[in-house]
Length: 289
Ligand SMILES: [Fe+2]
Image (cartoon, rainbow, N blue to C red; front, side, top):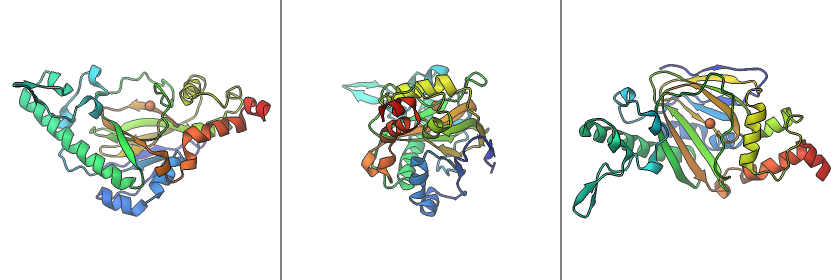
């Protein structure tokens, strides 16, 4: 099995944790217990070196979805039935139905995605048993990454800030390693780049804060480089840890909304901690205090 390779940059925190390889998720879960939640909530990037799937993925590894479908997932019904009865007619709401492939192949793809998603849902609850969570989306990203070279590190920006703890996982499904650059989390960023972020108000919306971080520091921050092979996974909060996908092809991304009071340390919820950190390190905070 290929190994995860990491080039650590001494100018960035050692915030990447590589787990020992286990044959099953049950073994991994019992080996680490609550430490997974502890690390995740502390904005570490956790590399799970091997996620054993019960489905043979060699066929899926020949599939390339068109670019317009590069982020479709369970929220779009990709793992839903290929056909449903509407009155006396068969209808399909599954986006895979629109692929230009023979119908049996489309049904096979759908069935494999269904089986994999079901296993991942079940495994995820074993890895984070304390989390009371709802699935936001499991995306089936089977298109090559088209990011421009050195487009900069970023933290994810969403339409609105969630009153939830965001759990995110990125499982490489391709035959080749997926390559990421990763950097500081946004709390450390406020400390390390306090000059650049001095003018930010503690009352800023978290999404607006992330936009500013990306604009001002995306190309500035140093980074580690992580090459993670087939069926390895990065568990990391893209909303709080700077990252950049350098290259990669097939991937499944999972996103779950976790109730804050089910966190190991609810006080570490980013929505609560960020204003305090801004107040601590920014000029706005100095003026206000
Ligand atoms: Fe991202």
